Image 1 (cartoon, rainbow, N blue to C red):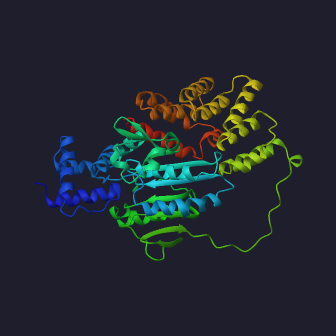
Image 2 (tube, helix red, strand yellow):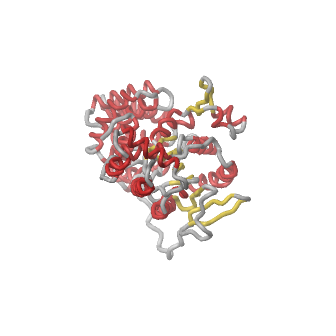
Image 3 (cartoon, one colour):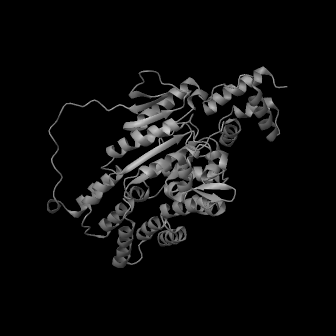
Length: 454
């Protein structure tokens, strides 16, 4: 029999490590988990609690998140929210992002991935053209659920609220189960993240157009929930949409958010910042004949950092050198003009012989149609420049996608070491909008998912 004092201490440690508050009123599930985890380490409950109170032991934190998580979910859960997403949020955000042609959505507390893939399917359906970049991130602390999510394969029960026409278009039979269509899978990435920890790579200001964080806040301590709400709000783009669970509420006047009601559904939108006093318009950018190629390249690089791919491509209309041609090829790939991007890569190799960055660019292009060719190009890039981290990282992710953890580790480990010294310009060109810290965190998360403890 577990003593009440031990159970209370266990909850205190869960609050400290995971930011979770006590919701299991009779303590039955929590007591069972405490006994099971202590036994797994050959410790008494008291010894286990003493060990858990010490710094570190992040692997055990992940095990607790897995054991105590509530993981029940299914595709297109709470259809009213997805109707609002489809009819209001996505059209509004597409109009707002017309200059950048980038949409980012995130599922916080994504569990086994059904919500993240539901967002991806809706984003793909709303996509105005192939030159738009779509990115969906699924975040959870439960490692086992994330591993399931990465398979993108589900039992029919998970599709119980999926309309027949959506099922036919976006799911493929896989034995007795169903696999999400590759078009949607390709735009989703999953990250392991304890929401009680700081995660600056995740909560970048103004990054997301749509955030789903449903039925999670009620499980968090007030301090952790308040901090998460601030992160959610700050990381929404102006005019971006936030969907919470029906059990969660931010009140009638939350900071920096507008509240909307649609039938029985409440949702939030990031308020537009008040207009500042008008100032003289900035001088127009210099015309092509008034600036050098180096100036154009730096301008395009700055626009690429801000995900303004179409604007950067306008600057790089007539590349005058190898560096400019590589930039144009990267931008063509980012805007979906894959054949032109491949042509640019081949021109680079014709101009200067073996070119690791050109081979990496070809790998990026081939990921859309042939993973084997993509892997071959990444291997060539890594061979030509052993210090080039990005092809190693992409190879590791390709191996993870096919379920080959051993192959993934063989590339992710050197990628992690090389990322520390990777050229900043290469990170901007090939990082997909992620900086060095975010890529390093992604690499570590994938290695941990492969069973590597660091």
